[in-house]
Image (cartoon, rainbow, N blue to C red; front, top):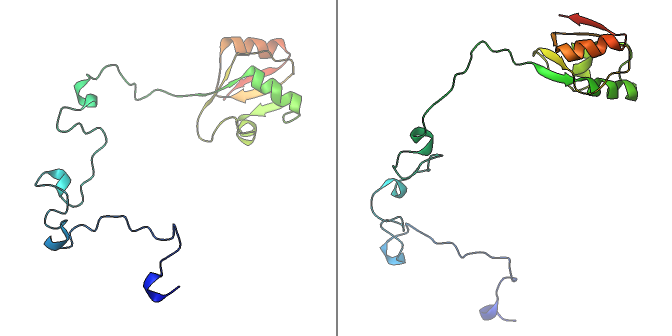
Length: 150
């Protein structure tokens, strides 16, 4: 090994990147491989999401339709079979309220809760939430439970 044949270890040096904009002598000066004019040649250019080269983008070509009710109340649903599973696991005993459901990770804070009627409930529970479906109310009362609407 001599000074004239020293070279770095294989894979340690990656210098295959173009050095653009370093003068005319480099062959990559002037426009720095960006071509002439246009948005892509300018600094700070980034293509906007949905941009189609100046063609009217899809989200503007397709008409708007429907109606969104600003006063709609979106309830978080909890089914009876989920409540029965929590009873079986011993996580709830006899009363269920919004805080109990939040602690068990079934609903998130600050949103109203609705009990839905899927599945069957065998446990006698006193459930107090914002709303119940008719089938859920019926099933809870049939199991000997109590329904309290907040």
